[in-house]
Length: 253
Image (cartoon, rainbow, N blue to C red; front, side, top):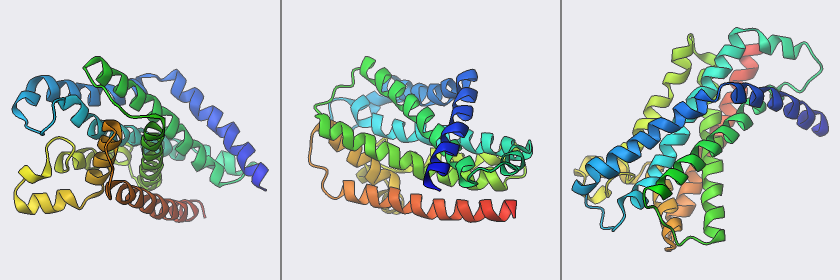
């Protein structure tokens, strides 16, 4: 049964990746917006923002990575909605394949596409002056956070992809996720915020995720930020996966 699931997922993953390779504008679009934000904040607004660090691009990069992922998963919901409306799911389910493999193919495709986008964003940051003292283990920890966060948000995207009434509605859910880093430590220290905003910013998931990645890049102790960030990511992942699978079964029952 396990081999059946992995084999079916691999076949459907190949189909999804071929679609991505034929529409590279998807990756380009989800990458250009975060890069434009990074250029704007570093070269236009960065001089007026005091973060207590010498390099604003190094301070900014973790938040831009989160925005990149949030932008990318909107396309997962969009593609899932189109497949559902086009009757592809019913066609697949008429075949002897593992039902969950259809969703997993979309999720893994999202992971691959978002990793490519994040790598491009990091490379642009390097051209803008980003430097890091992170060692191999720190880079692996950053990769782990990015992978778990992408999986968590992608499974979250599956739910509107299955339930939305329109293609725009399927992808619109990502807008609050893209906005969330702006009310966190991604762009400015939370200490500069009014008290009600600061309390929210310090206790929402993006702040711990951004702080953990920033400390790893700087080669500094991550303290409590890393376990808190992982707890948020894993918690969202488990909850989103359960809700997505329940929605999927109800949709096709």
